[in-house]
Length: 182
Image (cartoon, rainbow, N blue to C red; front, side):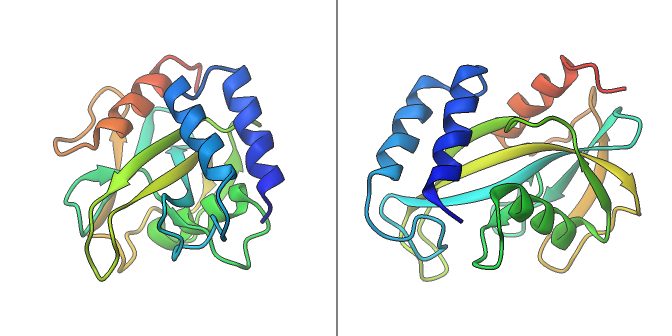
């Protein structure tokens, strides 16, 4: 994984309006710090994560996972691993780890969203930020099944998201609703 991939994704996200100006600034600052920003052990100011906005085959539902630590429904995703060749690969791996052995396809060539969210101190880690690169994926086979690392994984209709939904995920679902997903 290289910083140039993140720089390219950031430029594309900014060009297509899928990242807020304040997040552009925070990503730019992250790209200028020393250290391994793709490592889950990089805490100042944080590290890059990868996730998916996972649509059902018919495009009418989105898969969400119930996060064990925070008790909210979020999109599948997580930390980048050294073996991941790209952020898209990391997002697909994390999605399969949390939601089962799904066959996935990329829904669009751009990052669907780039977000920065703060993670409180806990589990022996200081407070830090996750710089989350989010990709639009579609299931093309397999069954959704929650893994041990999440409390639950479920399909929700785009017009009926659950209570306890993380605020940034509500924004993602609203963006999906505006797409032609069928």
